Image (cartoon, rainbow, N blue to C red; front, side):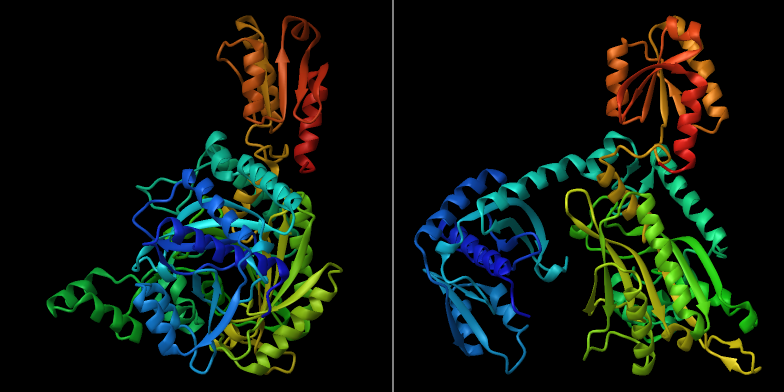
Length: 602
């Protein structure tokens, strides 16, 4: 696929970064340096440990490379020539990357000045066209993303055609830092990740648990209105279940290793079986194992199949807030948004082929309702289709054709921007993803709806039709939030921690101006609690200004000041997050206002 002009610019900047690093540290070993959606990076193996203090020096050297206006020169070479070139310079990572190029495909070098790189291109004409760039961060990265390989240093940067564009992007990054859910999550005491528990495993603290419970309550109400039935399933299942579904092996790289029971392990130990032998025998199905469930769908399938079904029973809609486990590389983990254990707001619909269109439309309508309620109205739709010519999908072509036709037709009826993207389908079926743009312009894939003709076939699902014959149902996978952890992480950033009243862990806080007013504040707080509101009383004894500041930092929607004058009038002085100082108001009026905001989810 041809690069866009911006991608060419950033790809060229990555080569200029490598040029500068080699000038400053000639012993650096190079791996890869591609453009990305937001900039570029380059991976280095080097004894010197990069820090942000190095960035100015590297950028100055890159500026020299730009000033030299070096042309990017393309050259085709043989595989042997390329191998000798890099071996003679000790660039073993480049030799390794040669193996990624298929036989018969051209092997090309790109040279600018005294720097030559293995690269398919393309680039701008010369380094002089790359004048607006900035190094942003350094991180660890494993060669080929495999933690068994050497750990390299990854320098991230960005580049733009115009200075104004770079400045706008840097401002966006600063805003992103202020909204970082990891920082806000700690400040607002919403969640915890502890290394002794395990990287990528989220613990919801009381404040965060309230946000999660409210989100679940909201969705559960909608599910009840729409004819869904709640189910609960185990966290592990037999490996054979996932062989049938295709998750093992088609999804194997994203799973935890299979578990084996104690009796089997003891038997294998007596046979002096090595770990490799045990793994091979599990993979071949000679030994039964268990799997931390990577998805809920196979268990929902078993619930559907547990009794005979008639066409009159369909559609069957099974829903679960089900926790699943995926293996993510440690370098890819990121707070709540990239984790190893997460809870999906999962549901699976089993229906007739004639019901597919209506059910998909209902699922899409629910996703839109969720996003609209949470103020995420700027989104696009991505239709994920098969990538032709690969073996990473299960099922017959005619079943895929039916499913892809269904999702394409449903997407057209949404009336929003939609793009068809080959290669984005699940291994069992095509899908419609909602890609949401947050308040600072970043895109996130959230809700998803998937049409699946293949898993019903693999599990031999059936229902009895009006003709008294057996028929195969169609399965629809649907998750409006996607993952409660990921969605909550994005919500924290979207609202900058200032949740709307219905989601706020603390909806109002009473601020007594002195110790004598504590009793009045606690009496009014009791009335608010009886009305179902989440409130507290600040009893730390600080001056009012300190109390207000603390409430603002805690992002409490309503701060209710209780002084002698307010107590005598049965009032509170209201300070709202949205309007600031609103003056004294009757407590009953304020209570009704907050109740209404919570009830209408505003």
